Image (cartoon, rainbow, N blue to C red; front, side, top):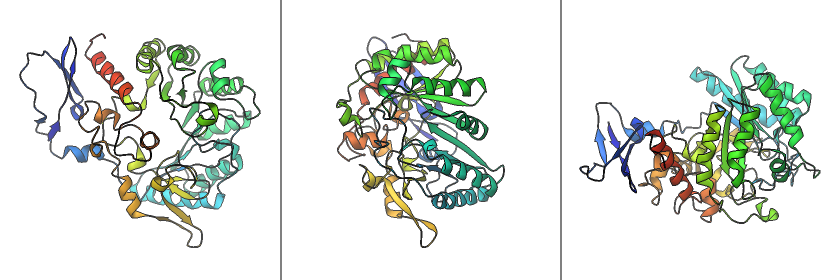
Length: 414
């Protein structure tokens, strides 16, 4: 196999050489002979095909439901402005999606996956969520797995149901009381911390597989290491994802108008040291060295995401037709007359082009196959609707962190 080699100079250290698909990193002195752009080994196959991997057909074995636009929180940075509209998916549409993915999964001899996500808080549409789980379990007993992203404002019945039925729970929570209550207040205006921490403790004490997702803003960036430490002290051993916010949605109402997060890269690397104390699995999606590829996410591959109104979107951050990006990311709908999902093959083919090797500003960057161009929707917002040209709003932070992680792997302190 012919494999790509990436190189970047490191001041006072030498030349860092990365062969992503071999998971190899080297630090060479400046006096070393020139390093080629490709290396050949005896492994058969094509490197690009190895990197793409995902099936880009319409035979989806998994579905994500954006059940509702309603929400019991009013997060100050919410991309969907959840709670500003009142839309909930009809159960009949959800059942047809379940039929579709279960049929495809069974044909492949694998389990179907059903995921519940935002656009609003999925547990606010509680009857629909329970109805989908029960229908799927009747439709294919033992052949369906479920997961959910939730804000954690749950009652005891809801916590127990999720504990019983979800293979994984992704809990959105921004940290200790002063940060959580500032950034993720209740719709009524009160603080959400006590409700959410109670949910987290319930899951942790019962061995439910769950992780925490922290959204980082200008209010919270300076406290990132302390915030990671907070979760470590309370829930050692869990996974923690740290993600900087995008400037969209409710940010305008909250006065958040800048992508700048002073010190984000340095503070993230410091937070890693804090995470190690508590055996936390800390990650920032655009700097995850375990995920080598050309596609940042399933947006350009196999995402099958249903909006409350029955549209099919490739991006979970496009929940309604009036949302920015719908002209790009919505590529199908549920046809109630025909009783089936209809797809726009041409739009779907265009979405498959959202790959880092198609991004001129990124394709030769040493971090390209690790960051994979960053989030397509973040690029869309930052580059006035253009995903492929321009750069990520977090380009410099991503490069800084990636370089730090690679040197850390080699035992080089920075």
